[in-house]
Image (cartoon, rainbow, N blue to C red):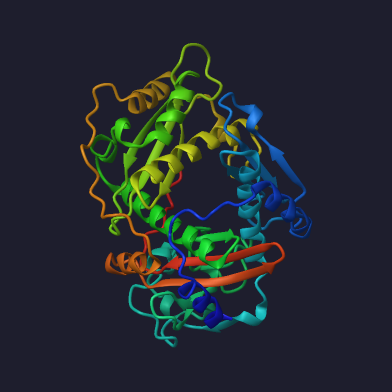
Length: 390
């Protein structure tokens, strides 16, 4: 299984450019029988809850062992629905990994490299986790093709309370978990998400980040400018910051807020993050995520947003948020120090490893051939996971 997975990706000669979406409506319809199998009970169009017109769709899986709701966005309702369904599938497949693939051992016995997975450790287990007997699953090192053991807790999404036996060593995260129409597409998505989260984690720890890393709106591409002009007419403003990744891959943090006259529909800002193969792609992805978050918040249906997220903000808090995003007189960086865009997987892997974020590990979790659904968990063993909650 692992060797075939690796060979299929390496020998596929696919570029890292955005995969061809094909006939989104046809693919969406083909997924519906699998929605029933995954116990997705509702696919809801949230677009009409907001006034901006961005297609936003929510998939709801009440029996999920992690988040019940999944959000998808896109430039069409079908592509947004596919995004929501695939995000829900990720967790479904990661809850149902066969027990036959899991084994008990310790990092010391398996000779896991020093520093690998340390960033994912909970504080209470950081000192001695390498000596503890925990569950493991075999994945593949994408740089070499060699089989590699990975802590099972970093792969599954059985987020129950109490946790499964032998869990409780690492933080719970779905970073790097992706479903796509191909293994390559799922791996690509997972790699970029891991790079994004690592860069955003560092941005949160960087003093003065918002003051020093603001991006000028004029250099973010025509797609971003088109959307900004549409939402500006509705009283919504946006700002962008460059989160530096050691890989040289551009990562953008976007925040939006209602700054027009009258009572806002959503008072506090929403935000989105995205890593892209170039700055324009990263900025556009971050902007769409921030705008889609508006409909998700307005719906009130997200199980990870509790009463405290909807507490009425103070006037001072709103003023600070608006001042930050409107940025009147705020300096912006004149260039973004990123390397030339990568087009091949080999170069991307080299950048990740050279930046000290490797090894690059992948675990194929599920494969459906009709329609094509491929689920892969990608883990950068040396990355800094994003754990900030506000």
